[in-house]
Length: 84
Image (cartoon, rainbow, N blue to C red; front, side, top):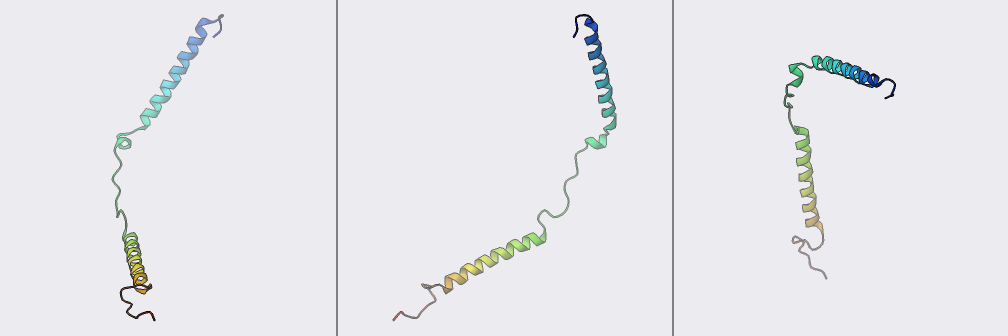
């Protein structure tokens, strides 16, 4: 803002505002009602059969491993031989 031309700054601001308004209006014209509609919900399986099958197999494997350890370790209730 120079003191020699007090209206020059106001003219620049008015020109900038007019250009900004024109740009925003042009952008607003590109938006359609379809763009504002909510997105459709996702389709298909949420987890999938492979993931479920792997989770069940891992759980069964963990149970089988813990049962085998419990039966095979010393002190198991199935071991009947006496220590000499």
